[in-house]
Length: 428
Ligand code: C2O
Ligand code: CU
Ligand code: CU
Image (tube, rainbow, N blue to C red; front, side, top):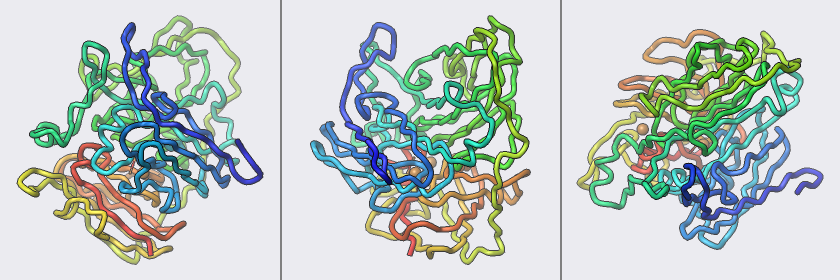
């Protein structure tokens, strides 16, 4: 539905039985009973209202990951939508074109609720991007990559139930599945023409990082990251994606011959976890697309402008007789404010890790200033999630614009998030 200024969508959260593995039924929880949920295509600057009705028997929270959203619609983890109620989430989308996604964000239960299927794509388009001759239409394809495990009867039980005794300790590293799904299907095949395709890659896994590459060896030309187009394309042999991260890449299948099979592999996994999907090169086709040498103008945030530098340490620690994941030694507490940046201010946040943590900020897209003291090579890019590897210090720079109010920063390993690795900041 649409009127003069607003597009409306209805998403009904409900359980459904899908055939994910051949011949078996899997009970999922999905937006509209689908996994992944419906892809929402929105326009920059055009208000989009999503009405979520909760037909499940548990409370939910919906968050638009990568959205610049006012706090009342951002899905704060305690802002629950109770069973049999509904809520309108309003997204002004005052932001550039980018590949976003929506997913559940309920405090302490995000891991199990996303695992069961509560996630979908949300694409923001704008005129700047549409003016470029990039692959579009049927050749612009979002791919949600996530791992799950299945029982013999086809069910997809969440193993890490944190209220179960011992589960926290057993799943400290996060919950991994042994089957890699792409848009909800295991090892799918896509028939492609000998032409360029744009793939919007999303790591929607709870805890598994991927290192994606083509086999036979080929080039993934990265054109976009979490926060939209890069300044210039980047030809890569591998793309690493931690949970929550996105990369838009272009693959040119005219480099292959009709009848070729090309695989998208995961170099970070072995055996079945090393296989993601395959492409069957089917036929010749006309292709007017191109990858321009200049994609966008990306402003570089200037550290000399930063008003404040804050430190956040991501480590484990013991709390209440068990081990928890903590930020600055403290577990998530919605009643506590951990930082109060001022609207309009530029700040540097220095993030340090013990083991790997993909760190995500709501509202404020950022740029990476340094990794272990080294400035990243090349042009700046906009991110909303950055992976800290083991024992790293990553400095990010951001400017708090848009809205005042309460937001979270957290580890996007969803079990770490549920085990309290989250902090609240209030833009004042
Ligand atoms: Cu994708 Cu706060 O989450
Ligand atoms: Cu988010
Ligand atoms: Cu973590």
